[in-house]
Image (cartoon, rainbow, N blue to C red; front, side, top):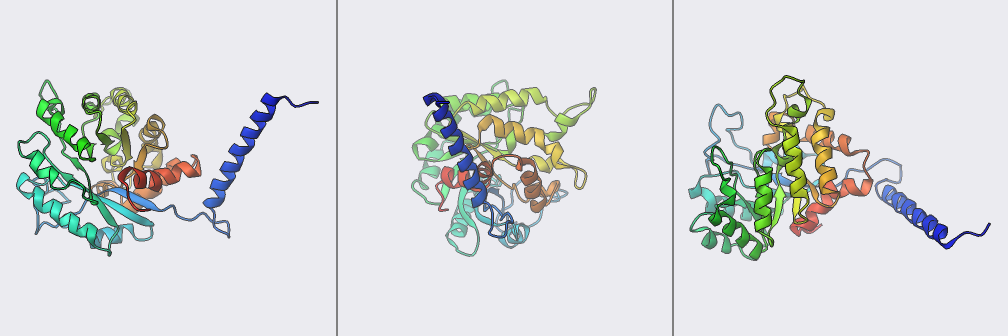
Length: 330
């Protein structure tokens, strides 16, 4: 029987797709058939030395109110193949912003650790923000800014104030990004900020701060937030191509030793599906993650959740997307 041109093209496309899958699988396999460890870029690494800076929120009885320095991070990541890390600001007091930035830049210049870039603290709505942030223009190390802002009882979210919007727009002019760290019921406000800053790239921290326990709550139980509202907010942000999502943070809400990857999966899979394989990046949120799990346990749980996905997409999540988004050397 003569093969039609349409059938020929369809079969050819299928063959190419199969070949691509085989190549990806081969690239992920060692000669002995074992699967090697995907190289990891950790895009949300916290460090603090309380003899240098004292973030206001880090006070006893907070179990994190002690030093977490590079030596501790290297211990936590040993054997995980973390090849690069991006420092994330730690909500220091305003007077410590310059000291934090200078310290992490010096850290990035060293060759004895994986930290090669940073998202520093900043106050986009402040009168001095332009002067503060423009001194980092063109820096190979400073990639963006974060300020954690919450609505509280205000009718309008602080991130939508005119001065705040101007500051975030300035980041776009300088080629920097802004991290969105808002509550799961504030994602719609974050989407409005994105709409007003067309030249700025954004990162949604911690899967939009979803609480996996809210998805598992039985009928009648009080939830920490409405999963449906969170989903709509994530979907609204995902519609903007300038927004990427960090797969991180949610394990810190779990009780140590009393959770499973299946409980994290609904949040993670919704984010992966909403943003697609090219706009999701792994992050540890260490040491905050240790409230619920070790860094290794978090990595292993995430790998288990994404195991059914294509090998190339898993590599994008753990490594490739971060290299591209932050402009890092692979």
